[in-house]
Image 1 (cartoon, rainbow, N blue to C red):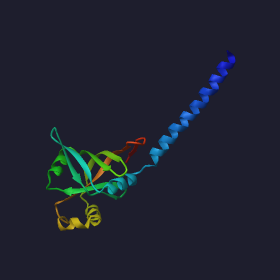
Image 2 (spheres, helix red, strand yellow):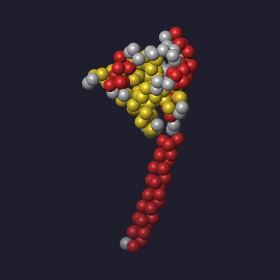
Image 3 (cartoon, one colour):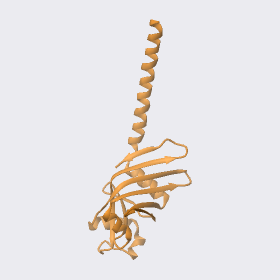
Image 4 (cartoon, rainbow, N blue to C red):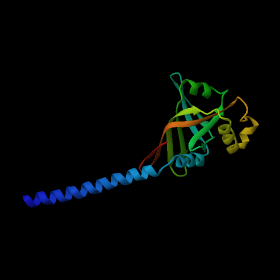
Length: 166
């Protein structure tokens, strides 16, 4: 009986060490993801959908602007659109981008925080020069927002999910 207990103890210690390493590897894998990975995925998709709240009604629409500025993920819109009013009332958003060729998607939950600085507006418009026919860093129409308290959830049909906070 004593031998069985010893063998069982050795097996449990080995399994515990294996499980601990597996958890560490999973955490390490997740820690390796950064805001840059989120940006590159969304940028590769070409467009994404952003959800806001309009009172008790969700609103979803396609967007295409995304950039990293000062190590934060930024998006851009117009202060004249309904989304600006919705974000002022409730800054919580969710973004979803899908890469059909890879069968992967990302969902990002965050608060969209306006950045009124000229340099932030200029940076975003420099990334998307085609928007300069409608917007300027010096107008009062351009609204750039950075994502705060963000969590990105990467998922697919064939891989384990990954999460990154930024």
